[in-house]
Length: 408
Ligand code: HEM
Image (cartoon, rainbow, N blue to C red):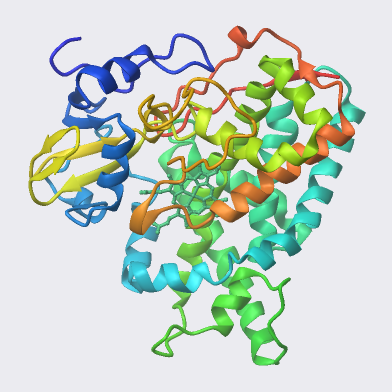
């Protein structure tokens, strides 16, 4: 391998990890790489190193805003950069996390599940009406998580398509002009402000907290431990953060989940025979998939740290490849086998440490619900093309499938 190879690496096939991951884990777990911007960074590929880098306070996400931090591309704003990041930082990250975390309880997820299943059922109805073959990405994987986020924010059903369009605009760094992006930001902020005002009036009118309560209402009702409510800018930014963090990621994993399960039909058939495996199967697909957590998470190194795989130096930017860590042969028995009953399964696809995914209970619930619905409604589901013909979006941060043609 060259001195600082270009990163990310190209996978040999859409559902297969790049060969470089295993090579680096064995020979050079703390490796210099060149990012698309031309900046150098340090790539971590082993489980122990990735986990430590994500949790050790000597490395941080905040440091990435500094001038000496490596950039992914010359113009990349991370998902958590941009106007919303500053609003969220004003709220104070830990405080913001604590306030939001109150919504993602197991009870609330349980209460949401029938609604998610009903939405998935309606999307399947529309797919059946359209006829086979159908693209599972546009029919199901893309709309479902936006609709769930709308439910979570308490957006009326009639306005969901607006959110689908906004999300598409925010996530497509290349398809829209700067003016179109700015217009979408403005429209989104105006819509959210109106929604927040309506909910503020409802909260002022009274009513008690329930498990069906939407997140904005909870945030408006609740104050932090010092009695301060979340600011209006913080609420708008939170709505956008959730749309950005929770849409493409979950949509990508829904598509990939069916691709992995159908590319070897024995997996699908095992689930048809034993639905009790759904929970562990979802977790295993998330571990196994080389695409969903995509590029990996960046962290800035504030002081020299000796990781188990080697040292990283103050001023370095590290790229934590969670997807490679999830296939580390030293951390997992049969790392390259998909074991639908694997337990425990402490994969790193949702990150770890102070920024670990707040929405993971919701993502899990969505994936379990949609798998349950498709096993029930379409037991004969199959890929309509060879798995080798599937194409991934040529994005950088996540690389979901362009389409997933299926038949039944
Ligand atoms: C399978 C789907 C998902 C995956 C793989 C995923 C993955 C991740 C990862 C890796 C991070 C850590 C970022 C970092 O360390 O810098 C993260 C953060 C976050 N995720 Fe998710 N996520 C998913 C779904 C969701 C959903 C559905 C929501 C909510 C609607 C959500 C909300 C968030 C938020 C708010 C953060 C920021 C947490 C913080 O900075 O403290 N995610 N996610």
